[in-house]
Each structure stands twice: as structure tokens, then as C-alpha cells.
Length: 133
Image 1 (cartoon, one colour):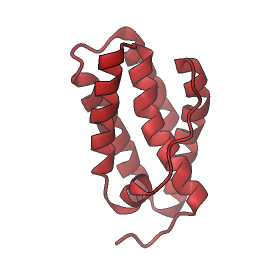
Image 2: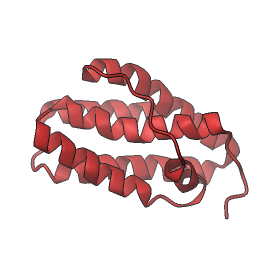
Image 3: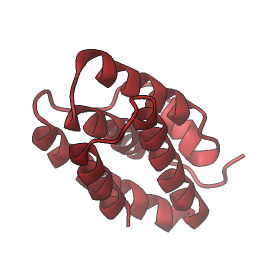
Image 4: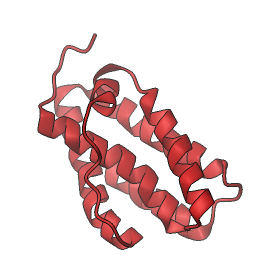
């Protein structure tokens, strides 16, 4: 059982960051079926998170993402990723590492279901990794 706690706003930030990262990578190289498959697989991975992060990601409330281009989504998601890692680092450094791992696993498994990772996706994955430190 996690000893640290998160406010509702902090949980919302984690959900926006994690689910947003999956969405961000999926729209970097769009296609209706492929994008849906990436989001579904990535979301399934995120729901398997445990501990403090798992509690936040399993909570109620949707990720707050803008409609539009990958650039529009990145303007919300990349700062949310930085903020999520920062607040988790402050509350429980192991949870910050776990957050990074689960987000990267969700992205990587999501895009691997589509086959070859396209250059635009690889670039977006690099941006996600950089945002998480």
C-alpha cells in the first residue's frame, strides 16, 4: 500500500501525462485503425500500473487533452510529464521511476503492435523520454 498520497489535481496531472503520452505518440503517425490500436494497447498497459501511480491512473477522470494536432497535444502532455515526474520524485522517488517505466512500456507496446516505428513516432518518443528526464 502506498504511503504517500496524491491530491485529486495531482492524480489528474498523472492521468493527463500518462494517457496523453500514449495519445501523443499514436497521433504522430496517424491512421484510424492503427491509432486506435496503439491507444488501446497503451491504455491496457497503463491500467496494469501498481502502487501510487497505479492508484492515480486507475482513478476517475479523463486525461485533459486538447483536440487537434500532435503539436497541440504536446503543449499539454510534455509539461504534464515533467510535472508528474517532479511531484512523484518529491513524494516517492521509486514511484517516479515506476511512472517513467510504465509510460515508456505503454508507448513501446502500443507502437510495436503497429509494426515498424515511424520516424515521427520515434521523434515523439524521444520528446516524451526527455520530458520525463
